[in-house]
Image (cartoon, rainbow, N blue to C red; front, side):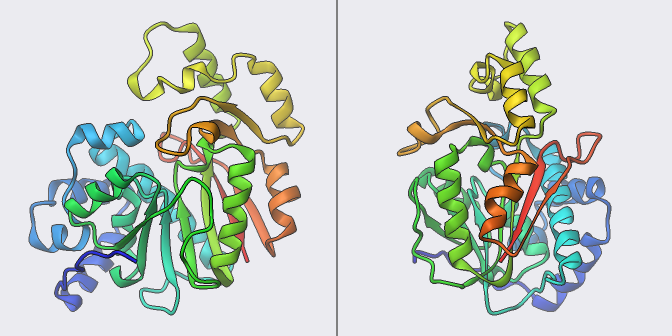
Length: 296
């Protein structure tokens, strides 16, 4: 497993700073993570920020806005873990995986809750991993292929985070990765993945009607031209997917726009996991995706 050097920050000092940071609301915390990035205690613990154009390329958001959504997602995951008696612990026997880590937005935020030695970023794009390493994101990284398996051992992972990934994967590809998550999670371990919410169909309809398409929606505006049929399928509990191609090497046949409805989560993923759940988006732009959680 390739790794990079983990910077040995002043552990006690960072623990105090992490406790203070996590007591802030997400907007103030996002501001600090951007505005104080030049301070040693911040950039050593989280890494440097990539160019704004790189941030926009991955999520359509940058700086404080991308962190607000990421932090809201992690706060929700933490609440789910507490509810399921599977707490976020800074040290522990299992890995903490960011699946589809991109430039490291979620990966670096995991340092608020977990020791960097436990954090592992995974991505199919070598260039994304290189970007995260170049900016000093405090984690180990491995490249994955478009299809499992990974090189991770059975029952070696405590938590899996996957933000803005599964709403791009085909049904077969998503199911293959769900089974891989089940293999690598330790008993009681949790996976948190996001998907398009039903309300996103309305946004797609506006894209279909407009000629001025934002760059981050260049693919999405081509998807689900028959919105009403797609919504009907969704409401009947069917996995909805429209292939668009792209997504990086090896992903073209399985990459597009996907909606995973709550009934599907319970009916299919619930067959192999001991508990599953579907959390609604959080309003006011804090988190515009639904969150699926799976416990082994």
